[in-house]
Image 1 (cartoon, rainbow over the protein chains, first blue to last red):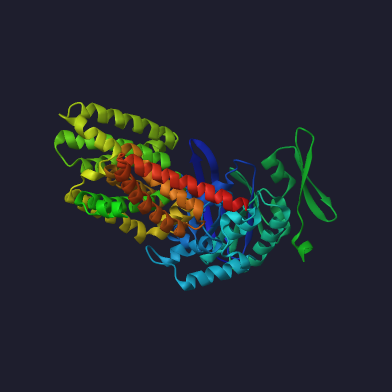
Image 2: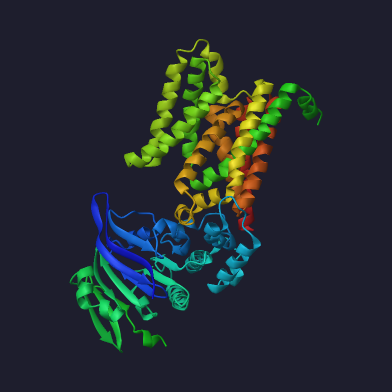
Length: 268
Length: 272
């Protein structure tokens, strides 16, 4: 299985603060990988390295076997702050087709073939009747799928999602996770998330990050009590319930939150 | 109608109408990018810096519009750079340059003999005194601004919509923003003869803001803004002739009235 992205001994400092420290990890094709970590763990920085927006201080990064900047056309990216684009006067179809601009080329007009591919991608994410709607008319979940369609429209080999499930309701999250599960047959997915319930959706690799690489591997291997405590501190514990691992976060005000971690087989 | 025909019969008003149409078109098209990218204040900063550029031209006996184009472009780039390296917000950087370049302009003007005669024209416009050369200059520069905008409209649109995505698909987003600022600086300078340094921001911002009240699509907004820009400029010139008022100020008031009419229209449509 070939690597779609490979980081070797990568360190990054931003404004004199070490954000990533000696990270070495690789992501395979047709693999659904999730990156977990607390706020400030360097998750977004890792994605920005893969889209060439941040350069590493030390170490090397390869994307689809070559330098990052020469392979950006192989990347689809779903940003964290897609809500901020909502007020721009643009339709769903015209937003999605911007994902093909690298293939269309400078100064060239968008062809009917490009629009046709954009329509197919809109259909794939379940927004068939939305292509003429404007972003301002969409809900958070619909907006999220528009930006996913845009990322897919450029026919990438690797799909990067930066906390794309935050700020949307449970139903929209479930739709997204089911879609990602289906998509991993066509490309590699690297998904930065706070939501541990995604692990139940056919995730192949989990990467636990807290500036350093805490653990990585299959969910069973990477999501250990030690890794979770290392990332979130001593107020985190895991327990099993109905054959489903749970993450239990106990904060100082004595409130409780739970994230469910189901095994892949539970899904089927 | 007789009044319109009598105005159009005179060479100076023909030149004013033609230059007004070109400036209205260029300002309103550039304005859509300015409004959507949130560059309205930078536009004000650039237009005020034109005063120092004009003053330099008058001091050294050069064409004040050429010196203003160079000076404004430099200020536009400096505003961006100072914000970047000084780790300050862009509006702070604009505030510094806006005041400093106005002050520099006033100081330089004090060394220019008979400058007072020109100052009012540059500050508030003097469209009725355009020569044939001024008209050619305005139309030529206007075309030069519109060519890159329409040639790379797809790229400019993505840069102002989503800079991160633009970079990802191979568009040099930062350079495109700087190019947009330079085009904005040149737009500002050619609008000086029509509405003047003080009021040029209105001609850039108001038609675009009006169009964005009326349509939801970027491409249509460009077209509607262009029509509004040309109409308000021409109507302003005609009204200023009829009421014997200052053309620049009249154009600005017509543009503002168009904006509030669109705002009201949108509210009425929404409540129905």
